[in-house]
Length: 113
Image (cartoon, rainbow, N blue to C red; front, side, top):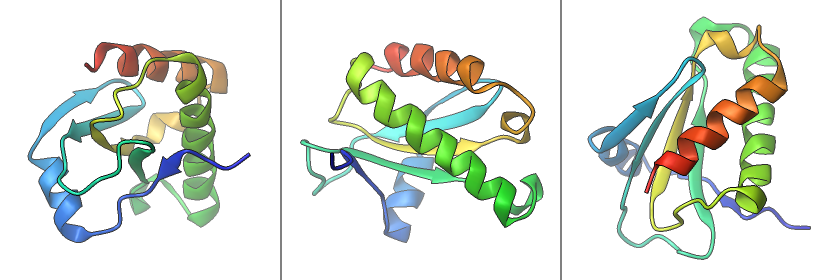
């Protein structure tokens, strides 16, 4: 099965999303808003982990977790595909259980309309 996630790649798009609305919790900060020229059939989302979090292995683990959570969220939660999302991870993601992180993110994406 092909993923329905599409990464944001241009620097201008990242800068534009950082000026838009945001929602944060213990694990991530989610920036979201409308971007021009984006497809509405896929979820436009990018995951960012800062170098302060740890080495490449730890950062990639966080990104894998986030991708997995978002693929599940597309099936279970009503996510607004009109928005583009930028998810910035916090260091607390490494020390907590996957289930707790998943439920928290599901709740946040439900609140974003």
